[in-house]
Length: 384
Image (tube, rainbow, N blue to C red):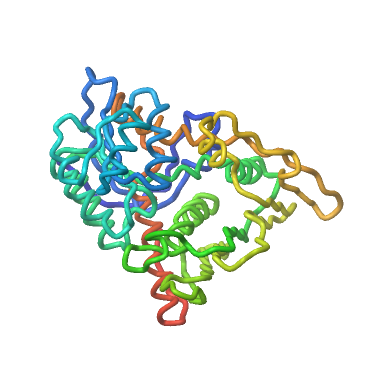
């Protein structure tokens, strides 16, 4: 297969009217590869989800089940009682291991809703047996794993993608629209925060499994930041604290990304904040925007009807130009769009919205952040 590595700053026009154009204009290390081979006779992909915890049950299985062109073929769990629950709740096959999943010739796409530390191994094994792969975020634990996964994807002509559903959060889309329409002016400083007052649960509270708020929630914030500020990255600085009794993951993490044009992005993660900071605080030359709270789609999805999600007006953000303040209604989010795009890619050869080179840049930031925290210094980068 012909492929090469290069640099690109050319954007692609979005075909999804709910995604502002900025979401596809991303200057980055570009991976050039032939389009994934598509079977024109295939209209539905059989999907197997590995894991039936919060992500596997409430996110992936649910969204796959309501996506045209995808069929929930099975779910894997090591627990026998959980497998009975899977059959009862999802009316699909129940597997006991990743080996059973990748050994099923009827499975086209494997979705990994597993602890982060097995993403690379499971994904590589699945792609080598002819399966397409979607991993929950983060893609893996470090850049070396990321590069190995991308290489196997290319050499086996298999789709490899990361579940970045929060590119379709209403607040993120609203910030992007304010930037794109010029209402904020030149934006050179963005702060994002995702803070809670509880330790991560289950494996997410274990370093050995790839747990911690930085991996879990930082994967979304870093991805969003790199799209909102589409500039080359110059450096990363990170500070962490470990103040959770009985846990070895960080209680607080602050990541500062400095871009070569002088712009700064701050990602603030916490398990020790009973009073959270704004989810978005955006500083522009014409105005400042502030927005609290989380996108309502998760709660609606858990209740069984993601399309019923509505953000209350009191949660809308505020834009202030130094003289007057106005309320900015939140654009509607649409997490459905993620798996709709996966279905369109596999069934019709559409363009991926979450591109491998974008994921690679997120993993580069992760590596630099953990290095910075260990060595207590700014880590300089040269990401185009």
